[in-house]
Picture 1 (cartoon, rainbow, N blue to C red):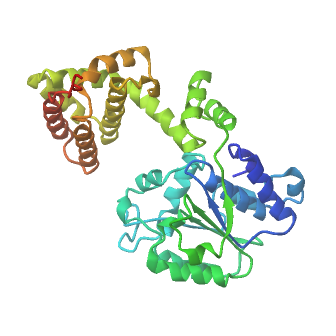
Picture 2 (picture 1 turned 60 degrees about the vertical axis):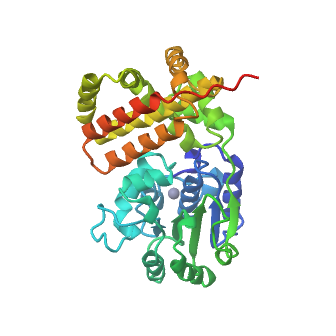
Picture 3 (picture 1 turned 120 degrees about the horizontal axis):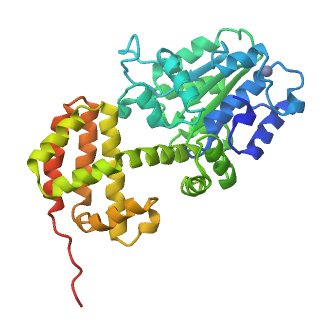
Length: 389
Ligand SMILES: [Zn+2]
């Protein structure tokens, strides 16, 4: 990761380069800020810069990208670069009874590569197919730190330990991490990453040099939406406005937009069938949907949730909060009387439950049939009219 590959964040980049120029690289630093601002990307660019062998790197204000160290950093396979990540038992691990970060490094590299280093916790959990409720930075990994770092560095001046999402640190693992931060091995750079500082133990926090990563500016986000996501001018402007400085949010909007237009027609037909309780047609459609892949069914249901939300907002005369085409807006308007405060919570719960069941391999056709019949009932709940004065 080069600094030039980071979206925006000019000031932070200069500050980080400055610490190397003045030989003031703090041994333990916490990069914190909201998801999608580029904390992980910055930490990796910084680590690569510190380790880059190019004599002119300070002058160029970036790593060279070509020296032996950079080549390994580009692929995240440098022997002096280590990661600790929130994990849980995963089918991707050889020894899933004893989960550890080392067992899923291949998946970690793939995910970072695919998403250009801008990822969410959900992306990660999804990548390694784990139950997020049980994921944490565990004691095993923290003990491994001590082991790993007790070796002298192989190739670089610095060994780098990146601990991603440190708020997920399991409480029993904290003493080990703390010990490392208090008595750091020589020439080791700890780069911790978190979204919030409040959930981090004060004893750990007090050992860290804090680097606050601000939101990406609208202009930089707009440029990234145009160049990296291929959005047109209007969509990019809208996405930059809605994403609140977060590139992962912008990516999500991008994916949702594609998903939504793909699923819209089908969803509209489905709602018509549910409303008219056309059971034979519902059966047929459920069967058809059930034959799709799990991902497709989930995508369809997620789009459904967005469409329902949009109908609700339209019904509340808040359609300016809805990103939409004219055809979609027309449907939201006509369908909005049937989606309201009297049934929206139940509808959302039913969709969430269906997504949950799809993830757990319940037969897709059965899920869609059950959901259709429940929706038929929920759509008949009358909207409460305001009492006339
Ligand atoms: Zn280099």
